[in-house]
Length: 470
Ligand SMILES: Cc1cc2nc3c(=O)[nH]c(=O)nc-3n(C[C@H](O)[C@H](O)[C@H](O)COP(=O)(O)OP(=O)(O)OC[C@H]3O[C@@H](n4cnc5c(N)ncnc54)[C@H](O)[C@@H]3O)c2cc1C
Image (tube, rainbow, N blue to C red; front, side, top):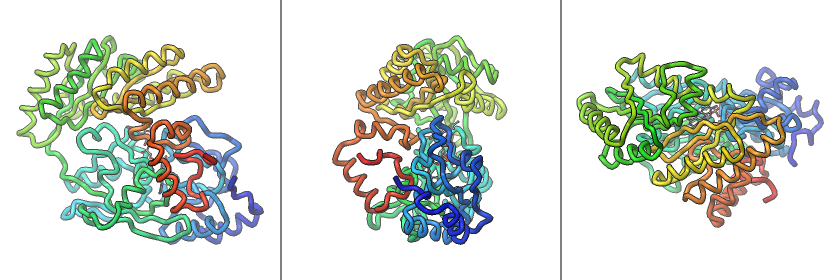
């Protein structure tokens, strides 16, 4: 195992202060513990980093990587550390390279519809900043108030607006990358069209810090939609809910959002953050449409007609900005509300072709019932991407084992329905054990060769995506 402790600790501290600047480094146990966590419940006190370094600029990051490369020290890039798959846990110790202080929006270019940012920019701050130019950056993981651009590129995060606009990968056109040995490179350019050579930009997006360190990104923007409408439509059956989604799409309407909340989710949100959700219905669809004001009426009327035809039980329409905001706040509270049900909450992220969504949701329910797990099911039904939020006490060995069994069955279920392990949260170390099941063996081989080429000493976020020694 690679570890910074291969070096004498005093020597390591002295070296790293010289390379990174002593004011940018944390070494205390408590601080190391805090920075060795993420939003999973998987921190192992025996697997802490030996130093946290705050990245300041590309040249400093390059010096740090060069030092780490020469001394075989693992480096784990971290933005806000909120991922849900153990993607920035320092499994092999080493350095946590934290990007929260590299948080400048360098440029917003309205003519070229792009912006240039550092990895530590908080997603909501970027959205607000570009909105003041009447521009829009759609990727919106539900924790966008804290999660950062670097981490969302690391995972290719999505969110509700992915259905119409795509996820992070669809908006990144150039990355400044520091490679494992400290070399600095750019993967693309400032043009939104570019087929010059292989698409290295996309190789790094979603690579979870295992291939290189992102120090700057050029992001494509789109004009801000003029207007939007938000509604919550309740149903008494999952089948009607799913049919409504398919009918809306087959009527050539592409809502900007079409998200599902099941009964448990509605009840759990309402009991902790009351906001007027109905709690006696089987499910609800949060539907948002956006575009030119003049085009919305027709879409809106058609959606209402389709919902009614599919036996919608009740339709709540937001009439003011405040009502829209209330619906959005309650939707985004689903994780926080589930977290109040038990000491721990684990969120999975399976995805299937949309036609298999009913089988997936019913299958998840059966698995969770079988293992007596309290589960709130929600997610981006338009994308076939479902998040079971499972509330449990991981300190209880029986519950823990039940969860592990359920997780394996859940992945088998999704794969059996032509789906895969993750739509937007990534693999990290939480799902790495299962990646063989989900990938073609030749593709897996190529991926491992790419990893070896770009990170021959395996110092970049080791033990993520693939398990070591496989
Ligand atoms: C309450 C809650 C709701 C969420 N909702 C959604 C959702 O709706 N949709 C969705 O897609 N996700 C969601 N997520 C997960 C989401 O993907 C992440 O929380 C977020 O996008 C990651 O950002 P972060 O800054 O916390 O990244 P981190 O957790 O810090 O990092 C994520 C990965 O990127 C790598 N990384 C970080 N910075 C760099 C860098 N500079 N260079 C190279 N690699 C880097 C890390 O090593 C790690 O592998 C949610 C999480 C929570 C806790």
